[in-house]
Length: 399
Image (cartoon, rainbow, N blue to C red; front, side, top):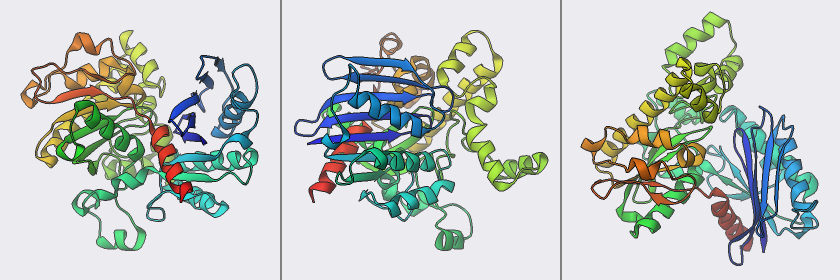
């Protein structure tokens, strides 16, 4: 059985075509820098590749290119999309409408799109990708949506409730939902396997760092707290998202700039973060390069990220009454060696000590980077949300 997994992020669209008989990848790729240019990298199981710059104004164009490279050209692996048994999609926000994975219908897509105000950077692109997929995938091929918010449903009320009048939760479902749940669920389980321990016995802080970033406390395999909140805007500073900001600062700036509520939301979600602080780019690679060249605002953006991650690690260790491991995943977490080094620096009192020389060589592969003397193990754990989504998709359509 062949399953296509589509993982549309805020500025990327990763995909994998998997043979679920052995869970081997037939082809995989990533259409990234969506909205700020465009590039696609595609690789087949036997080493054929496509690597080219493209024009990706939105996720729709990225999905169309995905279909093109899968079915045509020297690196194609199928003749048509009718060869696919099912398609699994990662969806960021399911709110309280979707508490588990479901089959895709027109109504489901519309409901996902209707939730875009809760995930402004994600849910509408998800809906666009779903509509685009329906145009080229035969109607007989089932599609499944897997929601990031599902993993965080184990958070206790003391973690997910806000200090607003209770009616806000009761009447409007205003609460912390948490995101990147598919990734946090996969990497925490993968880490337990790598450590040779039962995840039920571990207290883990999972740092998913990318264009969107979130930190999650995983206690015994369950999410007990996470940095993102009602929307993916909360938490640490991100590519174009502000992260945590005093609500009074938001209303103050909104009044000063004369912005509407929707304009203020766009300001926080698309014009802030790395981009707003540095004035250069939303991409950490560009920020790092500028910082190395002495750009003070780029240096500040990097310092803010590192400082905020440190605070979450400390607070979640306190919340779990212990800490066995810290893991780094996501585009920045897996590849930005300087971010990992700086986050773990000066934390020996906390039981964290990494091997800086080893850390500097690790990019995108599973590896323990803490020293033998470190009481808390530190790992780089490549995420594979696609495999987890494919497993969920297979389980659902098999029923």
